[in-house]
Amino acid sequence: MKITRVECIPTTVKYKRPFVLAGGAVPASTGVLLKVHTDEGITGIGDSGCASEWYSGETQESLMALITNLYAPRILLGEDPFNVEKIVGQMEKAVKNNNQSKAVVDYALHDIMGKKLDVPLYKLLGGKSVDKIALGHIVATGTPAETTAEAQKIVKAGFGVLKAKVGYHAEEEDIENIRIIKKAIGNNARLMIDANGSWNYFQALRILRQMEKYDIALAEQPLPWWDVDGLARLRRKVNIPIFPDESATELKHLLEIIDKDAADGLFIKVAKAGGILRARKWVAIAKAAGLSVSCGCMTGSGFEAATQAHFLISDEWTSRFVQENTGPLTIYNILDTVNVDIKNDLAKTLPRYENGFMWVPEGPGLGMELNEDAVTQCITPGKEPVVVTQ
Image (cartoon, rainbow, N blue to C red):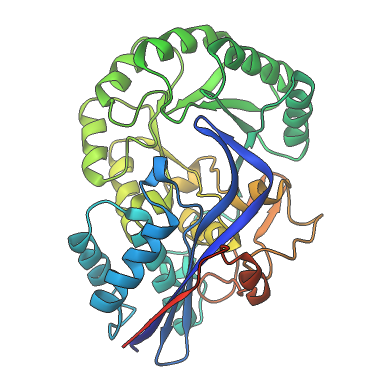
């Protein structure tokens, strides 16, 4: 089997409700849908999820350029798609950082392998460690009444963990919002916070100490990604577990965090790690250090959600912890996929989300079928797909 054609499609999927981060409100998930075609008629699909300059250092334009100008002509075309280790290694040598562009290639290759062998991807990764994936969910901020209603609605839907974004508003507003959410959910669910690296050390120390009384389960990335020394100092001075995310990208970063004792646990996104192959190595190192691993997402389509589901359900270590693989739920502002019928996703049928859990698709490869009509409708205005052939 050989790769014969690579098709890169720029997509923009609007959120039903803007997604608020420390850097501001994000109106849409803008990324790349990748098709890797083979001489046996099997096509692998990869969805990058939302390209994020501040998180992954990439844009839709950079994803398109790297895949079509470098990976496709120099590494992919004519290669056996089963040679994932070789291909990923060549991408690592060819380009520094830019892991999201490497990940979407990795996704498509794994989809091809599963389709060729006629088995779900998780079987190639070791089988199921659990039957379903326990999930947490982000609670949107708004007026006190809106936040309270949102939090209670999420808990009622079956989620045992909620996460609140902080750092976007003034310190006093963040603290008050956490108080409101905690009062709304009581002991019915755990509450996490995520600052996305928006605080400096003294801000984080002051704010987290005031939030300790609300029994915060963990604080994700309270400091900028580069301040690993600050994370180490901070976790010794507050009674809230510290979980780096943006600080832990490359394997070298993990070793630094472990060496400096700067984390109580870690967050990963498969895109951040550079794909399934690299994510498995990433988690192996975390496990060796005894650090729990929770997985966020790039708020992509059903394809990105399915890709991470196969990875998560097959890994015995990640299967022990609550995950956050809720991209489609965030995009369409829903809490399950059994009581709604989404027709405009890039995938014809979304993965099953119900009662705060996710089930992995059972079809060959990723187990997802492309919704070509939706893809056409979601092509980013003013941009065109790019096809690279031999």
